[in-house]
Length: 198
Image 1 (cartoon, one colour):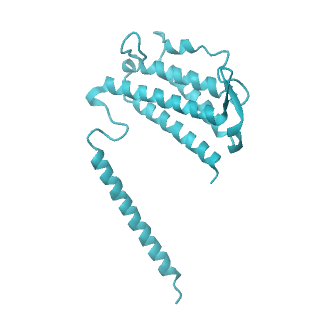
Image 2: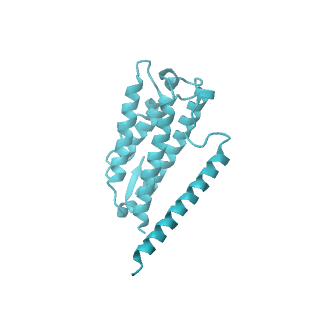
Image 3: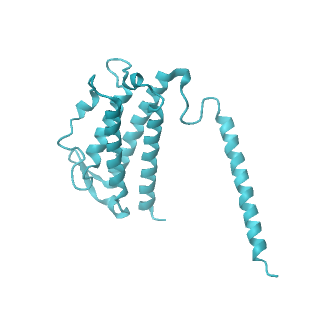
């Protein structure tokens, strides 16, 4: 097994999972809920999405050849939202940021993981930079899901195992594995039968 290739595959899988989870939360929110602030010192779902987009754009544009904190990034503005900002505009920023990240990581080879990049002038290996981005996305995805679930209350549709359903979920998984094992054993037996000489 090539550990570097496995790491890059896992990084892409993890980031796709964070993106999908956040979008599952977005889909349940009205526009008003998407932009709603819990209080004056907190962020809305839209603001967190805008920040993620800005962070990804900055970190992954010219990933291997420029500092991850771009001179044209104005991080503080990512936490501001004007009354004229529309949801589709936030989603365009969101998709652009993720596209840059997936394109950059998708172009990497395992040997690139040891290369040096900088973030705010601080040296990182490519592996460290990707890991930092993945952890950052997990942190903010959790915020998005928590806030969306708060706004939806009892109408929230779980994005993982619903509350009170763990035992049922585990039983189905065990049953599925048993069924899968039975199918594999039958296929093996059929194959062995076909291989018998007359």
